[in-house]
Image (cartoon, rainbow, N blue to C red; front, side, top):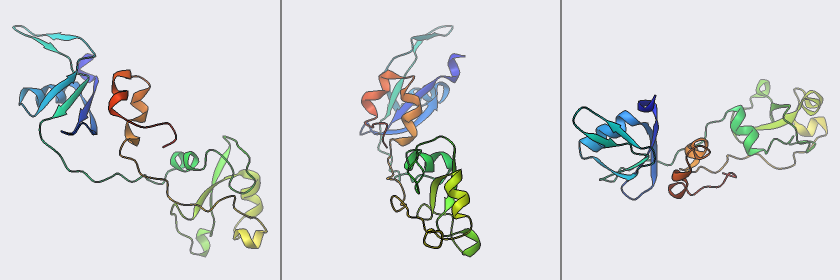
Length: 172
């Protein structure tokens, strides 16, 4: 259904803020809080009017927002470690999470203490530290860089007209 279409919402300085539904975008346009930047989806015909369907809208005022941080999830961790075991260097999709300092020994579930590991290395290390297990990390774990454009990556595959507003590569 067309009313469930996604619309890119830009800040006054053309920085991507959010992705909203078409209904919300039309309300923002109707109240004069936003202006249309791209019409990439055609028109909606009402009883007495024809409305352009926006693909990209821009707020007429500046909104201050904090830089988002990435949450520690399996998907994010595997992206950070490039789907590679941090002990043996094997690239595979069959990875597990490993706490460098095991949780039973007080290790926290933080970016600096969690790495991707293949099942063989994870079992070999078990509940020990890498030093006790005689293993070395290929690189020290750290939080990935935060990017305000990261949440928009999944949409860029379907919405080519958004690419000029989201300056990001797949590496982020």
